[in-house]
Amino acid sequence: MMSGGYTSIDNQKVSGSVPAVSDPGHVAVKFTDSNLETFPPSGAQGKISGGTQPPRDADDTFSKPAGGSGSDKSEGGGWFRTFTVAAYKPYFDVDTSDVVDRLKESLFPFRGTFTEKTASNPDLYGPFWICTTLIFVAASIGTFVTYMAHKLKNKEWDYDINLVTWSAGVFYGYVTVIPLALYVILKYFSAPSGLVQLFCLYGYSLFVFIPALCLSVIPLEIFRWVIAGVAGFMSATFVALNLKAHINSAGERWFLIVTGIFLLQLALAVVLKLYLFTVSV
Image 1 (cartoon, rainbow, N blue to C red):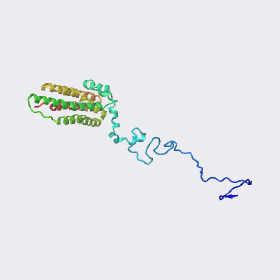
Image 2 (image 1 turned 135 degrees about the vertical axis):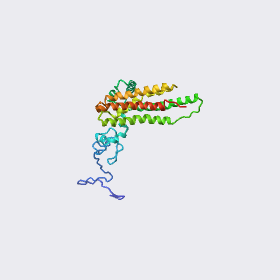
Image 3 (image 1 turned 45 degrees about the vertical axis):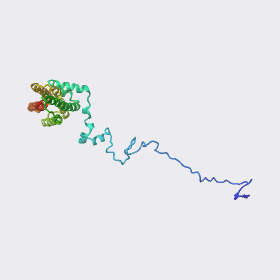
Image 4 (image 1 turned 120 degrees about the horizontal axis):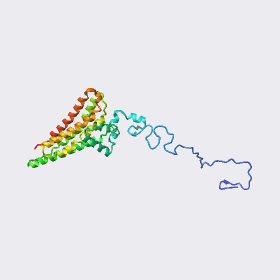
């Protein structure tokens, strides 16, 4: 029976089997296991080992962590490490009690135990702030004293900006150049001494000049000379006695080295007296 172009089979028995024909409209898709379940894959090679990191061929020279592997530390060592903040971090790792104890030691110069107490942990925190405070005190006290001296005599007063720059050059330069020169001399005589420990010693040796500068406001010239002399003697004794026990290995010349150190500290006190403790109108 044919109608509408289609053939219908009515009540007809068809013998045999008809093979199944797949429907072209349905496509069987088989999914394979993928290692994209976690990113990055646990077995990935190269630099990707966990977390979001640059591709394998990326340059990570400027993104290496400071606390990396041993190979990273060896690559960042040498002279390049000197110019990093991490190289100086241990020398600023002190608390208030440590700094106060070291300041007290500098005010009792005849003990000579400063280098022993700071041998395992010399710091640069105290010396830096001592020099910075000295610059501020020298500029402020010097300006105040000269201002009052001019006003008492009814004279015109002008602020001297060179007082700040001169003080900064003297204090920062002294605690940098002198320990470096002394370190070279002690190395020449095979005397054991650390460079940072010398910076620490000389920095704290200048603390006594802070109260001395504050007392210089008293308008008595002889009193100012006494204050400068006492401060210089205490500072020189503090440095000389603390270095004496560490440079005995220099042989018979250790006395000359200690004497030179002592006289150099006294010379600093004289320079400070002539420039900072003296008021001229």
